[in-house]
Amino acid sequence: MNKNFSFKLHFPILVFGIAAPFLFPGLQLQIATLWVMVLFALTWDIMGGQMGYNSLGNIMFFGIGMYTSVLFQVGQFAEIGAYTAAHGGDDFTFTNAQYYQGLVIGIIMSGVVAAIAAAALGWTVFGLRGPYFAIGTLGMAIAAGELMGTWEWVGAGSGISVPVFPGSAEARSLLFYFLCFGAAVLTFVVLQWVYKTRFGLAVNAIRDDEEKAEAMGIHTVRYKTVAWAISAFFVGISGALFGNITGIIEPLEVAFPTVTFGIFMVAMTLLGGKGTLWGPVLGAVLFHTLKEVTWTYFLGWQWVALGVLIIINVVFFQQGIMGWLMEKFPEKFGIVVENKEATR
Amino acid sequence: MTNYVIEVEGVSKSFGGVVANKGISMKVPDGKITGLIGPNGSGKTTLFNSIVGYHPIDEGSIKFKGEEISKYRVPQIARLGLLRTFQQTRIYSNMNCIENMLISIPHRKMKFVDMFGEREAKETMEEVDRLLDFVGLYEKRKLRSGDLSFGQQKLLEFAMALMNKPEVLLLDEPTAGINPTLINGLIDRLRRANEEFGITLFVIEHNMRVIMNMAENIYCLAHGEMLAHGNPEEIQNDQSVIDAYLGAH
Image (cartoon, rainbow over all chains, first blue to last red; front, side, top):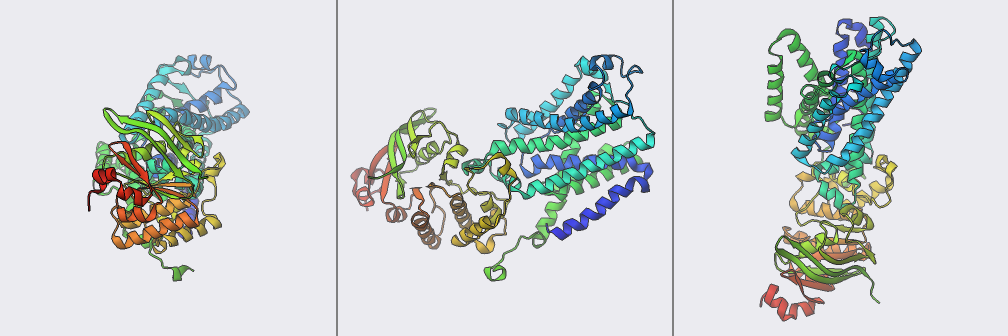
């Protein structure tokens, strides 16, 4: 896609992102969630779209990030075991300085730990291809949720509560809105950059023909590991933010929601067009809007509506919106026959 | 004295009960074009796969420039400068020709940070243009490579191999499925790759006109064993080769 087009989209989105919480204060949480959805779709696309590894377990890094964050937020100032035993009761209060220090370190570490986890787990699953990789990673995510649910130290099934924000409710939701927006923007900018480097070509080559890529000497394991770590880093951060928005972290529904967020990230990417930069963004916006509209106006039918959308998408429209546009208007995307005289 | 870049010594490989290669020994001289012929199922591609590390060998030794490589894996061997093309053409079909070429640069000295290196450096782009021009695909360079014709994909695969600056190139049936006009062009380009770029070629080929014209040295396999070795004339007149493969004319 050419630079002009990209810029024409960047600017209005940036303005909307900054103005939205003031223009639509009632929808602040929904729009914050939208940015998390954009982040989800973008990070899923690194693996599923750009590299051709359909991970159904990316949501695992959401939970890992969420738990990592709260453990750092609490653990720096209190004993975790006692904190969870008291269910985050009144004995544990944090000063303003402690809260913000905890939050900053918690967010950073959530990304770092999730990325390390991805690199380590990559060793065990990168030997799997196609549907086996999808099922293998799904198994990992489900197992992670179940394991956290039995671990007393972090609150087991009843979860662990996040330190309470030391200000007003409005200030809290505004802060986390902008953190979510910032995380989505950062993800987009980083991915836009890495796709333009050799990394982008290498992961595309792995997607198209991994055996060929190996035969050409590409460090495939290295690229795959780093791709998953980048993806996990940002998903981990989104987990930290979402955990703080929710306030209480419960292992199955909040931290490792494999059947909701875990599937949404795939559905959104497919809708917008996998393997493109803007496709996941577009897909996330449409999907999330439809979801919020049906939840509000057609309650009871919301899952049916989402199901229909997904079916239409995968049966009639596999290439997604961006893929369809590229097929329809190839010359707009630079897919042209060009003779020497024209360029030299 | 002749230098040998590839030295295969007593290599055997079986798949279950099928013995695909049995005690194969052969040498590929540096800077020359060497051919490998034999009937279908005689073990030619298995030998190629063994050399490039696609599967472990049961016994024997394979050396590349004196270094034992039989335990190395595919990407490691490729990074040493020993590259192969596939019988079924393999390119990155959703990427355009330029992108296919850009990612085919040598990965020998890639460090970790090079993953995020500049991919369209000026010299690289010039090389891409030059090689795409060399194989006659310059005008189609921005098209999805999967949309090219079969012959054009073969040419692209060859250009990608050259982009990798290999020392030795193993070509598995480079002219299979290509029309006669294009074959002449391809032979010419293979020769030029050998003469101008100094790349040693080791070629599996069923087209006798092609291989007899190009190669200085030919090995013939049959039933997984080395049947004969010699220059084209010797091979053409070898009774065992005629019986097993060429047939009487």
